[in-house]
Length: 269
Image (cartoon, rainbow, N blue to C red; front, side, top):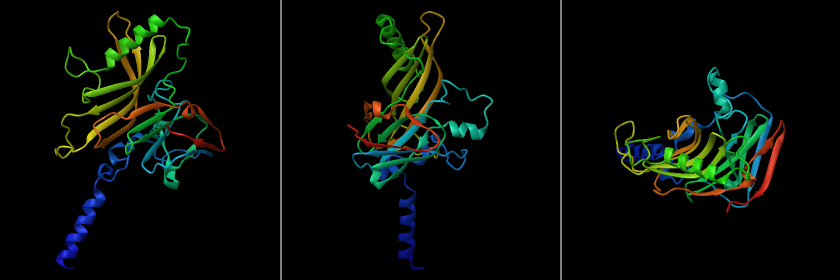
């Protein structure tokens, strides 16, 4: 084979192996383990089709079932296939991203997230915790708890590290309190130097979106402790800013049974 053809073939192989960071996509291999592998989950006849009013070829659309979340069902004593089935589901995009399709869904209520690294937008309808406090709850106590949680999970000036100390920028989007427990939706970024497994310096910025469940410590002043966490997004992208967040009730609590479910005309502001 001529040297020129060999060189061209090598370049194509290198480009094919480069992460979506340089292709403008939202998904890179590092984050794929977060979502259920449909070849490993039990068969189910339920499905969900979401249709958006605008195209979005780089969207990442995720369905998060409520029944087996880590705040309601621990992972101890479960099998590997069960743990795979409990993971959030990643949609198959169709029609230039106007349609997101989920197959093999067991009966459940699903909250949906739409993450797009090309527009840096994050739309979600996540129910963060069961039995969240009603609006009539003592507002002073709720404010106290929320302030305590922000201090416990945020960056700390009084010590090195803290919860998920790898990330040096954190932004809490929402907190739902239920007595001495709470659910938290948080974005995190690593703006400092980060290394790949090979030791090479990563060119992009590592982003993470997490649902975190916390519990208030019994000892006064001890803060809130993380009892579980579900990472719903992790990616290395060029953007060094947080996603623009929007809470969208249309994406919350979508009931799927044993048949096909369709939801149309979803507008993403």
